[in-house]
Image (cartoon, rainbow, N blue to C red; front, side, top):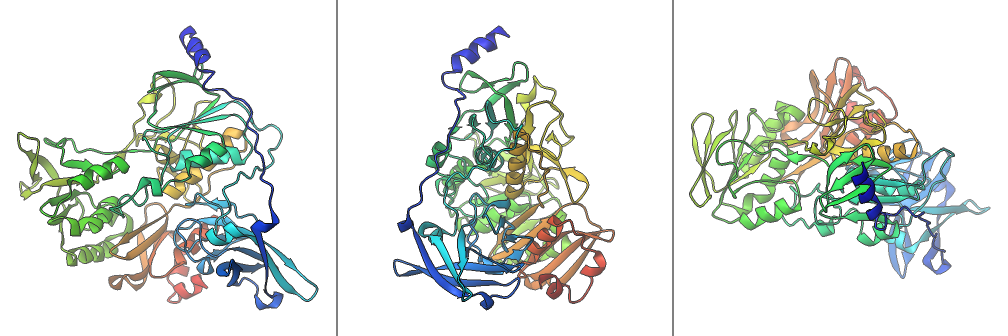
Length: 565
């Protein structure tokens, strides 16, 4: 005990908890522009309409929405990836992106569902006696469609924790969102974020989709933003052990640091194959920026690439890299790619599309041995059926696991999957220890089960829920799992979760223009689509509103038109 007290005392100079005060910037009139936009009656109830405003003779789009007789003005593009919000889904005073399901409050621009690291720009609306509509907007927000990255502090109710030292383990989607949420809701203590990588926290979603992925161009926020919010980022520093008593952590930089509350958001690690030869330099995983840099250095036109696994990462990377190597072969235990998620009908047409792009599938098989030379160079892979397949590179895409050795001195309960069990407020069974993101197994509100949901938007939602819980604001996790994949220009979106016993198809799966409704009993539990935006976002909004879509409704031959209306 005395060792920790001494270590903590020595570190107090570096890990102080002085109050953090946010200075609100003073707006200047020259930063704004105001224009006449339209007449009140030019927009109908529940209508979304694009108009333009000029800044320095350049026209910029804004979106006007009328709901319950009130007109709101906002950025016309989603702050996430720029989807046109004129095609978005309207909820109760909220607007949901048609592409990836991010959701924003139409009065404040606040994020109500992810993925997005930026709030939506909301512009001031006023009317005159002649029912003319005028919009006043900040010039920067007109150009970016995002709310300026200034700290907007929400009033904190009595009883919330406002001081102390909160540690966040992990600089991914969950950890970063939690840190920013703490500041947005008025936490004035110290926030320390320990990151495994030697980079500013970044969005990994495009790692497998873009061979030229640059982590610096995909940062959640610039480092200047963290400094402005007084969030302390520690790259390449990981927590080694958590000591609940006396509330301290030992970190890889050989320091002991005290905490008042701690959030575990360390994510998952790629699963390695354990068969002989798997540690060859040419056998890799793809989980982070460093992995991609190594893989890029190994690629060449004469390389025979084998990808083990038919999940999203494996398929996306195969589509990305096929023109950079001699050949690509995908090995899968199932009969069709993504069969466990989308089912065999969609999986079979994905397989056919990949085969037309010269990507070979070997189904119902796996690797039992890697053949390597004395120089540790991969030459072949040996399959379960003794087939010997030439291979000069192999990417392992066989799922992930959880590294939780830092819990050895705690009584934190683990799920059978190895993830940390949390409740709907992202609390573990141990006081003042929370978990969020891929490392956590949390209850899914709509489905009545707990699960690990490995998608960035859900991780961000968990990060926000955990941060609020750390402050004493118990807001349960209600996010709907939402993900997407893009394969050779075909984008498939999916919302929902869970096992299903039937699939209802609309459209034409073979032509990649379809809607698939996954049902369990008489309830639609998930939906996938290609070419019918924003129907999956519509389903996500439907679930968020605690509505149940019945199987009999999904069986209607006019379902797409009715549901997208």
